[in-house]
Image 1 (cartoon, rainbow, N blue to C red):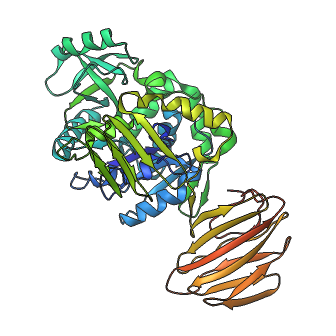
Image 2 (spheres, one colour):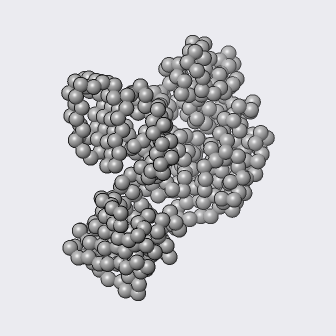
Image 3 (cartoon, rainbow, N blue to C red):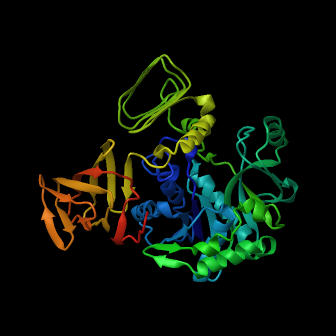
Length: 470
């Protein structure tokens, strides 16, 4: 059984913690592990489980690789989508890639950003799904509804035709409140979890019948894919031919092989700050308090501080989230309206929607400490043994000051070491590179000056991580 983890989401509903370049699945929101790590950890103990296939945005590939390595899952396959085309092409590409390596593996399709509290019950549901999938069914996991929720799609099951798995009668879109209440009261409906299990051949054969254009495009995208370090880069031209469509619409709503396995295991898609509050441990006043937080006469609130002391007096039902470059304050009952803030950030072309002030790279990270009209100051940390690309800039010069560790610097034809409390200067247009040859992190202060300081003013000549302009 191969887990296929879908990790292409942007998680904007949990802004300002979750951002385009580091979305919610890569954040430790509920415990010390990220949601992505928890997705894989809860499979420990499942019989015949193998290393996963992860389908992700190429911008997130190094985070995926690092977190897989931290779980000692180094034999995993990381498939890079050149662009998002929804779940049907992503799952099809994973199935085709898996079948090219094994005769006909069983695939367990999971989302990277779900929370499941009762792992034992979840693994029991996997065992039930396995029997049906091996018999040729397309299995979906239906969440036993806890309330008439309007934020989820629903699955109608024929409960008269089974005991542990039920034929799917209908997939329905997110309902209004009255319709959701009817669904829940009938007892015939489940929330649509977006998790599946099937044999690779079953998926490909059924998808070939109902959406042959997806199978054709994904087959070409996999056949022409390029292997790059630990990654499989799908061919862009071929993959872009796929319609952007969900697996439900492309297949599950049309096939006669769909069955549903009920799952009542404390599932959540962690889709909003209110759901994160519901999932988290609370104090005696029903508050979730993370970080340097002081409250007085505050109830039913979620308060998260990354850097600063946050103090609140005499307010209830709040969501307050502080990061190094943004603060969110919202009524907990209105956090769904965060989409209005996201839309405005997009309209203003604000980078706060994309990046945190601290930006992670495969070699380490940088933190933009200060900036002005013609200058920018960054704190740079390079992991032991890692190296930035050989590059140059058309519009900026750089001063590097080593705070701790030792830097191996290349400037033009010269290579030399720069130790603690020493500095060097990189002129505009000068080819240069930075490397940490030591066994401890290299910490530096970089002062940039020039007419343009954007991250896209980088011309790469050589890069060990396979990057060109990202």
